[in-house]
Amino acid sequence: MALARKLGPRKSPVNRVSKPNLSDRHRSNNSLSRAIALEDLTAVTSRPSDNIIVAVMSHISALQAAPVPGMPPAEAVGDASSPGANEPTVQVWDDSLQEGRRQITTLYTTLRRYLRTAQVPDPQAARILEARAASTRSFLFYLEFDYPAERYARLKEDGIASALKVMKESRGNGVLPADIADKCAELYDTFEEENWGAQETGDDTSAEDTSAENVSPESAATASPRRRQPAVRTQGSVLERLPPADHAVWGLHGIMHGLMQAGNIRRSYRFDPRYISEKRDAKVFGHNGLTPGDWWPLVHVALFHGAHGAKIKGIAGSPDHGAWSIIVSENPKYAQLDSDDGETILYSGDDSGNKNNRDAILESSPGTKSLQKSRRMETAVRVLRRKGTGNNKYAPLVGIRYDGLYLVVEEYEKTRPGQGGKFLQFKLVRLPNQRGFQETIRSAPTLRQQSDFWKIQEGY
Image (cartoon, rainbow, N blue to C red; front, top):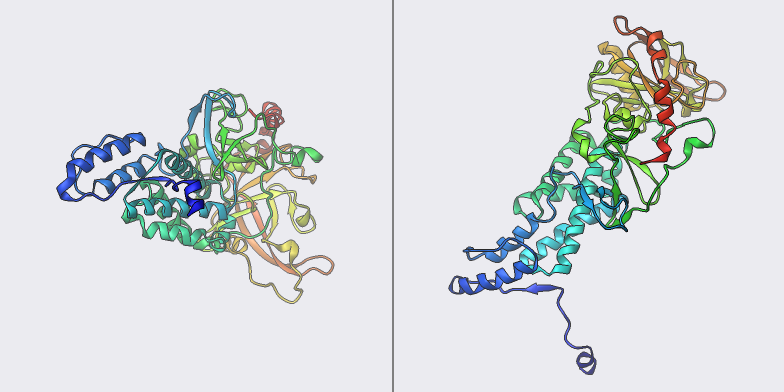
């Protein structure tokens, strides 16, 4: 008791308002209006008997609603201490899957508690909710557009699948802001359709983008993009500057259009949410609106333009439909297995560089199965060549280039040299009636593209 008198009464973090009944509706409406004014919510007039619930619901719907569902809101920041004062910024996810799950579930349980107890959050609690809602949106955007499809299986392992399922099943109760609830349901359905990665390709035949993606055989290949100012971190996400529209490299007409730099610890490339509607679906057979000779500095940019559908893997496809595209890269693991003669390619299946069983080919990966499907169905495959550390004379000097449509004409069972095991290899032949091969490989990268490529590291 003495301690209690010394410390004084414990302060509640929320403004508690008793549930009104029909007899004191007008009195409760007045007190409710004062509470909502503290939260900068819309004034309440003539509310029904459940006006407390309506007030909290109004607050939920006002939690920094994004202009496009699932897209982190871009905003002008005038604080000189923020990255890029008076320049457009966006919240970008920069934490683990586990932290993302925590953001979603904590936002939901907190809002549900307010509804159940008929409490309106005080200003400090409201600011925390707003930050958590913005962070949740940035995480959902990351899952939808920036998280590699090749790693969908981890979404189940790290509890994202169960969290999204709960949010989907709870969508009707109105606890979460509508755009967040709808996006959770949409993502859950999408990942379910993809069987949580069970149908995705398997081997690392194409490395994930790091900085200027193998800008040279030397150390520049793994250097991180230059950071001009530190990002401001909050609730698992960071506030990042967006590229200026008139920037020569990162702007509307630059080679990096559609991407931005992000990350507080390790800088990486992300899709710019302002232009995400321009991102083309890569799960399409044929040219997909592209022309042989089209060139991009990074695999990530090729994804934006729908040339390839995997951030990490060299085969983008489905065992049920076939392969949409492959990347021929100078991967040392396949140097003794594959061969590239320009219009004819010998391309090994996923994980061939690691096969050790000399008696039989073990279960093929989804990527290998997709090439088998393309051979049986005689569907053309987009072939992209990417500069690596080898000496492939057909590879671009820098970056990645689309070299046209090829047909998978044969499939071989081979054995790795030395003590290696059996693997599958495919023969692809370039189709006629498209831009000539020699003209294609001479067309890109241009001198301007090469010059701009080396400027990626400078950032914006």
